[in-house]
Image 1 (cartoon, rainbow, N blue to C red):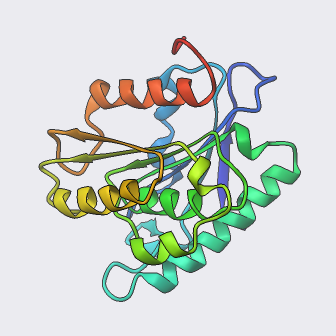
Image 2 (cartoon, one colour; image 1 turned 180 degrees about the vertical axis):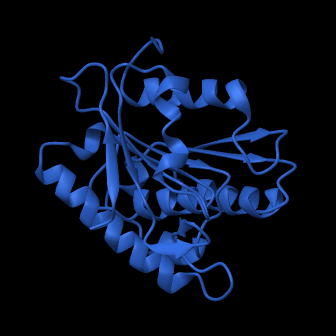
Image 3 (cartoon, rainbow, N blue to C red; image 1 turned 30 degrees about the horizontal axis):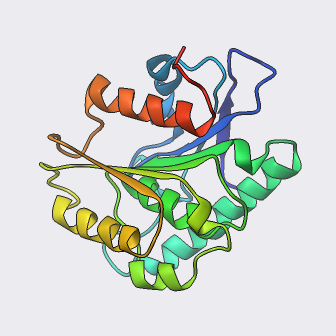
Length: 211
């Protein structure tokens, strides 16, 4: 099982969950700031560490060789984590799976292959692994999933044009993906992007306001 940490919602009765995955070289601690920034008292946060050590942090897959074996292994580990939490009373339909960079790629990978519908799928500054193969292996509920993908036009790490082309390909295949561009590099664009994410989470859970 992946190492993970739960930050409970202020509303202790809530089962609404954001599973948020870090990027390359980061860890679960890199997203401890998120609850205070998003200010959603009904949202729980499940923060996993990726399985591979990487210079003091962790990685979801190999960036130097073939990414596919690592993506597949991490996908299976995330399926197991989701299955365990689902079995313990955390419904998938009340879960948003999200991530940044490598974590964003994994959010799309899991979000479109896991056999149960999520409340939403969030990819921030992430690529798509083998888009054509992904479209051939979509889960039965993939076309019912609600996705938000964001990327920076100034990203020096993961080229903006590549991600945009991949997302357009998925959109053209009929997937429900909202695409937003920010004038940013490989980061989260402060309150502007947080406000978009906050609004997406509220929409996913049927909340009219962020408060």
